[in-house]
Length: 271
Image 1: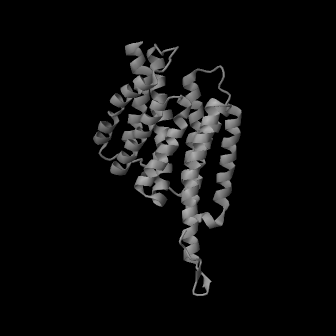
Image 2: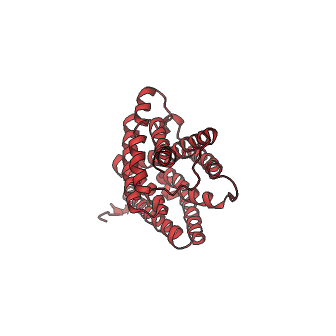
Image 3: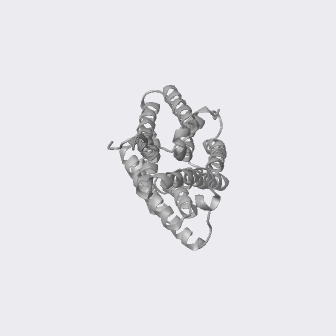
């Protein structure tokens, strides 16, 4: 690094600050690597070891938040705690013996609460996170993207669905859960909080890749390279739409519709 810390016989505070910023940038990308590595271990080696590594990452992030010399990055480190929490909460709740759809709801509740807490800590208002309902008709048009993307995802994933919901009330519960507890939750966490915070520090393009790589890392559990690739490009697309419309309403609906298409519509049509 071509930075001189000594300036006119004294200590160059500005140069030190720039050095710390560059170090923080490197640490952010290193975090993506460790999340991908941990998710790989979690999926292919041992869930227990994966959870221990996620706990280590979570504790490290909390320590980083407390370090005063990393103050400009406090919001990002705070937001990044949501990533290990997703996996830790998903495997720590006692969900054995309850219907899968209620398991999705049970996992989403603490994650929604954690997201709200982090948003309050870093000072993000709901409107900034994308909870804007102006020009709702355009948001509904964006939501329709979920149908073609869902069909593409279905052919990539080819989900093995043993118990398809058949009763109307069961299908309705699944639709609500996939829209709110998957679509809205993930857009709230990744676009509303994480992308917004990363954008203020890294800029649009870097923040898009940073957020999308993290989101894709969590797709390692699908054990499908094609699914990871499609997940990455869908995340990039949703980041672009979020920048364009400054709202997560349309992309949350599109996200939910993707899952509805993959797990409800396509199985009813093709199975």
